Length: 588
Image (cartoon, rainbow, N blue to C red; front, side, top):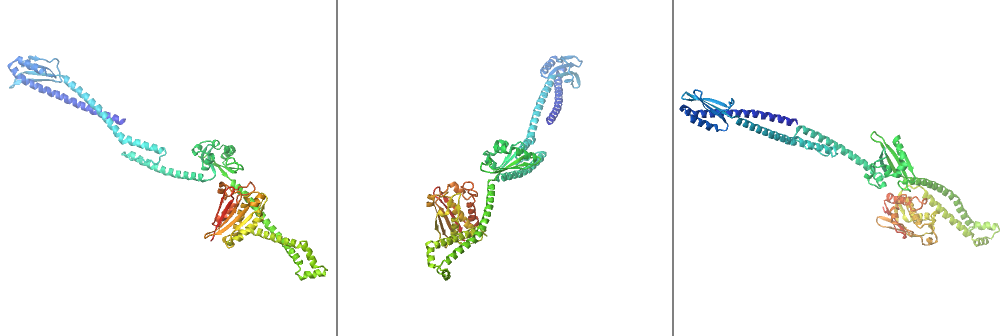
């Protein structure tokens, strides 16, 4: 605004100066014209005055009076007698008077007056022209200044402000273009430098935020961030899957709206944790949040900090952990039972040895092949042949043989129990596969499960394996695997009855190629569905009723074969068509 005012003042001063200069030129021009006319008129009147020709004088005066800017003429003779006079009023500004002479002889004088209308009109036109030119000049200068300001200052400022707005809106990659204004250019450089630093910091913050969010999303636990009012500020993928909503639909909503069951159980605990700034943990055995059959551990962590008022809710599925604890307890019990069984086996071995020895001695004392027996019978006046006939008739020898065979079988069972319960050292050696399979089958024959009511003795065992096949393995671990497979095959029939006893059979095939020794355990039981096959080797997965299985037998077998022996364990089955478990052990 001040620049426009300065331009107006300058233009006005220039126009005033020009007007005064033009007015002076006009006045000089009028005076010069008056001088010219008076000279012409005095020259024209010289002869008529000299001849005293009044008519010619009047004619000349009338002729000059027709000139537009000539106001009047007055002619006087040497005696100041007026010969012609058309001047109405005297004017000192544009009046000229001169003497008329001829050869230095004074003839008279002439007075001429120019009209001021021409001068006034010319001055008015000049003033109007000056004003018009001034206005046009001012307008042109204002427009020029505006254009110059637009290109030099306004346009760069608009770009500058637009760039600042984009930066303020979060587009920190925006850079301002250089301008021709040096002072503004320094501001542009400063803003670009500031935007670059902000972009770098925001990029680092974005990377950190993405990393933390990825950490949260990678966690299997349900993570929910809330503010002091109970509104959700953040949550991970596990929480999104649990609530079955989109991430954006959850942010800003009340935790009671998105997770009503969780809010119902934890509202008081959340408030207590935030107010007292201490974490609170609650364990739910049958948690409706994750599912009625699952256990959950719900922990509320208060957020501590001047700008953080809220908490983080973490929900962990501890079903597997609880089951593992139960299995560990059961394992401890089994270890205790195993120790008791080993001790009992040792204790049983002693009287069993005495029984076998006594039975063997009785058979020897009743044998007619020992001379001592005949000698003692003769001393007692006893016919040995008659006694031997009596014992045979009463099947005493058969009973003694039965006692000896039963004792030997019991001793073998005890020996197998001791070897199987003995802690293995996981030494990998080369063993004969047939010996391992026969030994495990003998152990399985002595297994009777009252809860499932199956007896391995009732199964028809088909053995298709040679005695020359050897495997490199840990003997005790492979025995554990095959015992699990045999027991699983037997259990696949369910409770045994007379019909199932007649048809139940387990086939064991073993063969060797260049790389692997392959063992197949085939049963003709109930088989399994495809979804069961997919999970059959998962830890804690079982198809048995609660209390009859831990779901670890096949999982442990898979671990032993695949991880410990670099082999393969697979299953093929269909409902009603039995199942085939295939074990592949490397030859080397």
